[in-house]
Image (cartoon, rainbow, N blue to C red; front, side, top):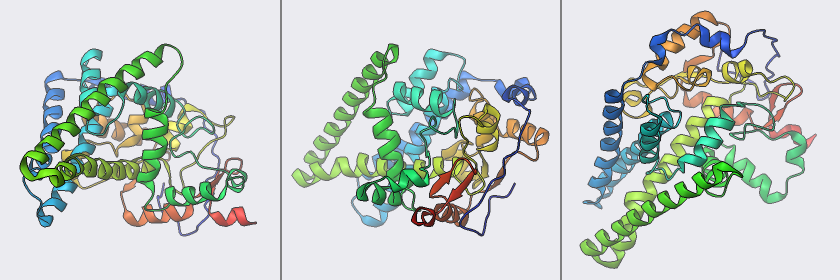
Length: 358
C-alpha cells in the first residue's frame, strides 16, 4: 500500500476481511517472543547513558553552539529512555513483571510519564481499541459536525494541534496531561496511579531542586533559574515534539482508516490502521529501538523491540496486501497534515476543513 496521495481528500475503501488477529499471531515463530534479562539491562543502561551524558554536558556550558546540539541529543535521549520504558510497560523487556515495571518507571522518569496511568491509557485502551471511533483517544479525529459545534478557541486549538507544527502540543495536552496527570481511574487502578504520581512528582521536585542548587552554586540566582530550564525543561519539550510526531505518523495518514464501532475489528485496528516506517539505521539503533516497526507491535505488544523486524517480515509475507510500509518522509508527513483534518466515519475518509464550510 502506498503512503502517498496527491489530493487533499482521500477515501480508503472498506475491505471486508475474515481474518482475526489470532490468525496473524499464529504465523509468528517462538523466536519472536524470546526475552533476555541481560540484554534488557544493557539496553536500559545504553538509554540512561545517552540521556545522562548530554544533560551532564549541558551543566558545564552556556555557549550556544554547544547548547543547541546538546539539547537535541538530550531530547533524543529522553525519547530513547521513553521507548525502552514503553517496551517494559508492555512487559516485553524481560520475563519478570516486577522487573519490567521497575524499568518502565525508571525509563519514563525523564519524560515525566506516570507508568500506572500510561499502562491504562496506552496499553489497555489505545492498544485494545486502536482507531476505533469513540474508544481510541490517541489522535482521535473530529467529525464535521463536531468541528462545527466547537467554539472559536476550540477551533483554533484544533487547527494548531492538527497542523504540521502541532503534534507536540497535542500530545502534551491530550495524552500527557489530560489522560495521565489529570486522570485518576476509578476502582482498583486509582490507588496505583496516585502512588505513581506521588513517587514521580517527588522525583521531579528533587531533580528541579538539585538543578536550582547547582545553578546557584555556579552562577548565582540567574543560573539557579536557568539551570533547571536548560537541563530538564527544554529536553522534555523537545521529547514531547518528537514523540507527538512519532505517534502521529503511526496512526494518521490519508490512507489509514479509522473505524466505526460496528465495522471495527482487532484485525482492522492493528493491521489496517498501523504502519511500518524505515528510519536511518543509526538513529533507530541509538534511540528509537524499532518503534517505527509498528504493525507487529500492535499485533502483539509482548514482542520485544529487537524482535519486531523479524515479526514484521513474517507478517508482511503472510499479508502482503495489508501491511502498510514505506520510508519515513517529511514530505509525506506534511501531506498528511494538510489532508487529515476531520473524518467521515461512515464513508471512511479523511477531510480537510473545507468540508466544514459547506
